[in-house]
Amino acid sequence: MGYVPVKGGTEAIDASIKRLKYERLKGNEIIEIQTIISTMRGMIDQVMSESSLYSPFLAALAIKQAEGSMEEAVFLMRAHRSTLPRPYYSKTVEPETMLVERRISASFKDIPGGQLLGATYDYTHRLLDFDLIDESSESVERWLHNYEMELQQVENFDEVKYFPKVVDYLREEGLFEKYEENNTAPKDITKQSLQFPSTRSERLQVMTRGQTGAVTSLGYASLRGYGQVHPTVGEVRVGAVPIYVGHPDDMEDDYYIGDIKVTEVESFVPTQVKNANNEYELQFEIGYGICYGQNETKAIAMSILDQCLEHPEADFPTHDEEFVLLHIDSVESTGFISHLKLPHYVTFQSKLDSVRQVKKGVQEVEA
Image 1 (cartoon, one colour):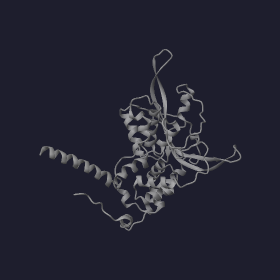
Image 2: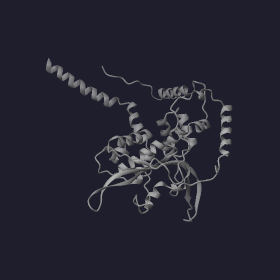
Image 3: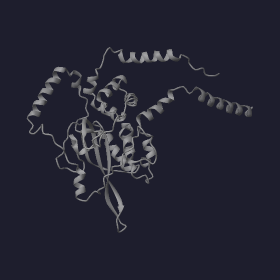
């Protein structure tokens, strides 16, 4: 017998959407947008990074609408981003101007300006905190008051500091190669389709908006053995960088329009190169990673892949730009996998008919 598809059309879709809203509201609890902004910092940063749209408010709205589904929230943000005008481009951001909240180096114990641990889960015990069950507004206000009083006792707490780059000191020693500044305008992958071979600016754009889990997974694959790129993190910086746009008539007059929080990573990757005597010697290359918000694992993995993709001659999938760049996009990968849920009646029926004909032919031969 044949298979008959279920019919319902628009009425069935409307009923499904109503059921979706019911599932979100049936607990009679409403989460405020401000609550998401205040308490789900990591999720908001991840959604903004993967959607390449910096707006904590819109990210919180997408998270609420998607009921916490990361892939759906990113899809919503990307869709909204596509409707926004692009009246101008900002000036190149200089990470040296970052107002640093957190800055560490795994390469050196002591770095100029010192290590700044900042806010991170790196040093916490991975144990469930059952005190959070009974957390109240009163206890939060009390804790915040005591903590802010402690901060007032810290010497030079309000002093604004800009920290130097670790790699700059190594360059001064001649340990890292110096490059001429490249002022070639980057290609905007949201306006021009990605072409291969790609430029480094295109690769960095794809990776910074890539799916966090995918970027981390491929970075781990390279670290684990597919290329065996084992860098040392030279510096992780988390903080706010100012954004400027140029005056349309005055090239020297810029306007400050705000700042964004980013995570920046520079990894030092050891490589073997031949010197003038045709002998191998150890040198270091730099892998670079940067993304919206505080997302250090992704930025580090991105820096690994950045160095990998600079060496396409290596015979590993993590060095193949088409393999990496075409499989880490959150919306592309999610959409293509999800499309398998859509009707495939015609193609599947065709395959079934082919199988039936083969089976029928075999049975006739055996008879």
